[in-house]
View 1 (cartoon, rainbow, N blue to C red):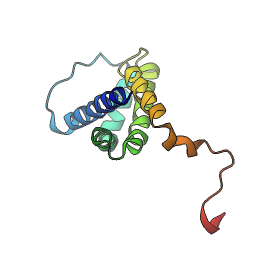
View 2: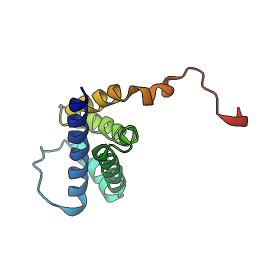
View 3: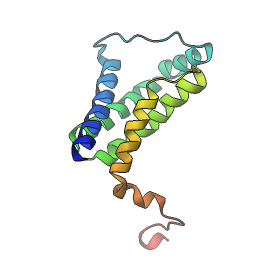
View 4: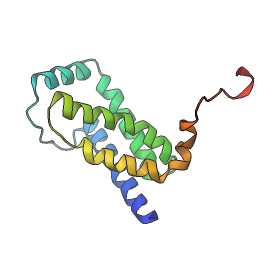
Length: 133
């Protein structure tokens, strides 16, 4: 099981580091399906406002954390919202499944593998720590 977790962690981390770095460095051209009008408007909005640069920083940061394994749960926290947005883009704006499905499958597998580190997120009626509560 440890070998599978390691392989999935490296594959997911590498995916985000490579594609995130490609945005800034233009290392290779990616084939892209013809966007729908809604998808084109969305991409124009997040590109011209530089919002995409912020997303790519999260991708690279989370990918590096997953690759190194030093803070794998934090890496998952950074890339999982990006994966959710990829899936929403694919289904809502493009109308078809895409890369988001395998990315989500890998992320969910890793979240399950690291579940003790996420257990406190599911605390019912949580109270703030310290004297504030």
